[in-house]
Image 1 (cartoon, rainbow over the protein chains, first blue to last red):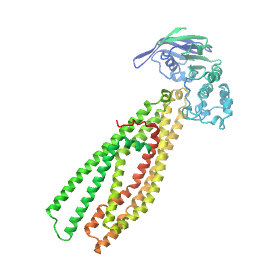
Image 2: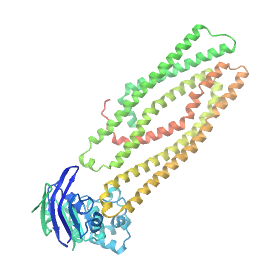
Image 3: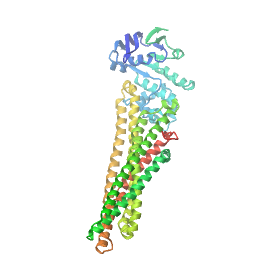
Image 4: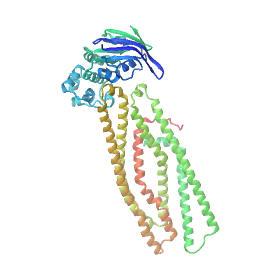
Amino acid sequence: MGITIEDLSFSYDGNQVLYNINLTVKYGETVGIVGVSGGGKSTLLKLVSGLYEVQNGKILVMDAQNSIERRKNVAMVMQNAALFPAGIRDNITCGHKMDEADILRACEAAQLTEWIATLPDGLDTFVGERGGKVSGGQAQRIAIARAIAKNTPVILLDEPTSSLDNDTSAAVITALEELTKGKTVLHVSHRPDALTGCDRVLRLEGGRMYAS
Amino acid sequence: MILLSKLLYERKILALITICASCLTSAVTLWWNSQLSGIINMVSTGVLPSKDMILWTLITMLVMGVTNYAKDYIAGYTCESMTHDLRMGYARHFASLPVAETENLNTGQQLSKLQNEIAGVSSYLNTNLFQLLDDGMRFFSTFIWLLFISPALTLASNLPAFIILVYVFWSSKIIGLATDRSQKAKGQMNQYADILLTLFPIIRLYDATRLTLDGYINAIDIWKNQTILLERTKAWLMSLSGVLSSIPLLFLFLVGGQMTINGVLTIGTLYIFINLSGNVSGVMMNMPGHITAFRQFSANMNRLSPHILLAGKGE
């Protein structure tokens, strides 16, 4: 099984955010979750990815329950691509040893190759403080290349195209298709149209999960 | 320095009162020294000072105490008011920004500005600005008065100080550049710390601790090396300046002592020169510190200037 969530409840400082969530995502399945802002979508992804510790209930990602093990099995692309103040290469490898061929493959899949070829320093081009030297679309594709390079069975997407304009998001959507090919995907968005390619779409409202 | 003139303009009446208080204090100090010189001259010739003379001296001492207190109080009040205007101007600037721009602000960088520039400027305003003005006032009034009493001794004891000034200006420029580099490195380090906080989820998800730690350690190392270089440069240049600044006093004793022995100068007048040497060569002795602090203050003010929105009236 890709992702299994059983009787999951979660609260911040006494405020209940998620109530008794149950969800099963089969291996290779893409599940979309739609809901308004503040409905608990991002919190659910942070719990699945192991960034937050489970308080009540159970989460299994590729049969791993421990948050450290869960983190090893997931890659996540967020709304605002957070880049390290380093070169493109380091932003993809995150400082881990990686074959040049794997890095180039990740760049190709993330639609970065043509742009990188135009840069004098290529893969070693500095992206700036907070990615200030690259555009929003380029930053998001670097974040996707990072997720591709991690090569995990589960992909979590937290509104990856919502902060981009239509022209830019086309390249990012192509990159996302490459990233999610053959993977178990949990994709959250406040826009139902962003989840059109999903096998199933659920609704998260007021911390409770409903069939869409 | 446009910002400083704007701040002073906002509090122009207070600034004028402070300048007047400083002038009055300098005048009373010189008057006190003149009376003391007279008493010493009388005592050295075996004549006791009259009761009226002692009474006037006591009144002068009292007036000197009151004017000094008033000067410090008014200067402190003016500086605090200017610091308040500066902080309010910084807050007003942020309040006037569009939301989109506010969202993209780097908290670390802004915090660094608050910690470094604004704190530095406030501290300078409170401890140095009017002290510098006061020193300048004492320097010029004393120098002119000493020239009037004995031009030969004044020039002999203070000319070396002008040569030292050249060294002082050169050394303060070097120190100023090193200070600027150190402050920039500190800003970069704080900015990196803020970026790390923002990137925390990514660091955990992609196990990028080593990558980010290396970058942060690098930023700390740059700041550490710049600060060590600054302190070393300061120590070398300022200790040499301290040695050089004793030369005017040596000249004063050499020339003034000879003049007193030869009967050209009275012991009371020599006393005035020794007592007031701090007002002339002493000010020069403190000049490296003053200039370094002023350069640092000026650099901070220039960096802050685009982020300060003054109300146009004192608040």
